[in-house]
Length: 423
Ligand code: NAD
Image 1 (spheres, rainbow, N blue to C red):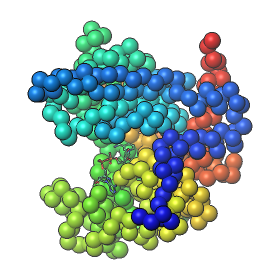
Image 2 (tube, rainbow, N blue to C red):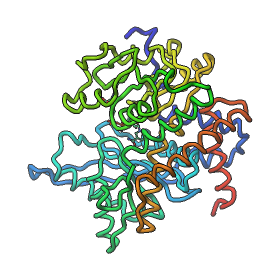
Image 3 (cartoon, helix red, strand yellow):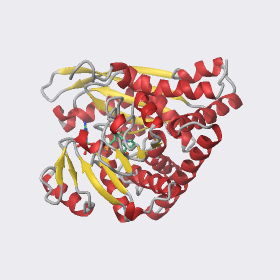
Image 4 (spheres, rainbow, N blue to C red):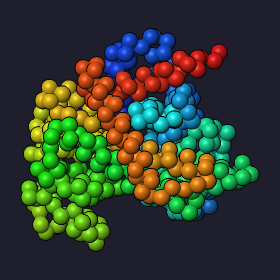
């Protein structure tokens, strides 16, 4: 990559990504300096060292983190990721991100995030279980349905959530399902949780189309990433009559300007595990996919996909962010000057945490809702939040991302002022 086109590290640093937006929103809100300091720093960051006997009999010590950013509006909420490149800085940024995400959709949670530096594909199921249980035991007094409620994230799944729930429950001497969300249905999980992020994304994309008078059959959609979020979004938009013209996975994209038959693409991917070779489309690169002529672009793969390098060539009218942080702050400026309407990550992909909230409510009630009820309530939350952000953006003359942050910070700041700082 040449020096001219290289994206600077500061542009793709997660802490910079969240703080640069926070700073702009805080300034526009005229947040007083004390509150600014309070909301900028996490409430607590915990590092634990986790000894695990590996299958060889060797003892290995792993480093784990849990950062609780804010609890002004309720217990903190946020995923737990297992990955070799986890850092405390990254977890701090993601914890703050969760505070704003929960506030923007108005669910009664603060934000947190956890991570363990490890390489799950290289570990056996037994090693992962011992790691998960010891991590949970080390954090026992900091977790709980009224304190901090983790959920799945990169390389963690329903089984790992079940181990967290069981370990916590064994220490508490009672079964506490509400300590974690994203659990298997048999252990207090919620119907509709797996599809919730994609469904939420579909709902806000449909609302944006109504705003711009775009009829589904005339609306071309491009989706980067065909995993949990991307494939569900593609299927649901297809069912609504949208023309999904391109999708991709990490290897490549497939493009058919006439529209892809999404159930056939899904079936092809299920059989072959990849999209490459799908017969009724052209093969394109992920970089080409982002720049295709389309009405809606859904980056649903990973962070920092739209940067100052490719933003000038993005042709979409609407970007609905499925991934966390797919667009850099520098790219935001370019897209704004090109009048691209962005539905920002903290709003667009909040369907997952909203149904996590429903899971927590159901666990506490001990009464479980039908999937149709979950989906209907998710629709209410996502639609209301989308329109609140649009209204806020129009009233304050700011773009959708800054409006989301302002709305969220304002809600958290109000909660903080009402509670006061206990000293
Ligand atoms: P996933 O692992 O199921 O799917 C990711 C998809 O993106 C796969 O198709 C993969 O091949 C593709 N991909 C990965 N790296 C890529 C790259 N560099 N270029 C192009 N494609 C790439 O993950 P997911 O659960 O669908 O999550 C996708 C994004 O959405 C992540 O940023 C995640 O943090 C975010 N997110 C997920 C949820 C959720 O509920 N799953 C909720 C909120 C946000």
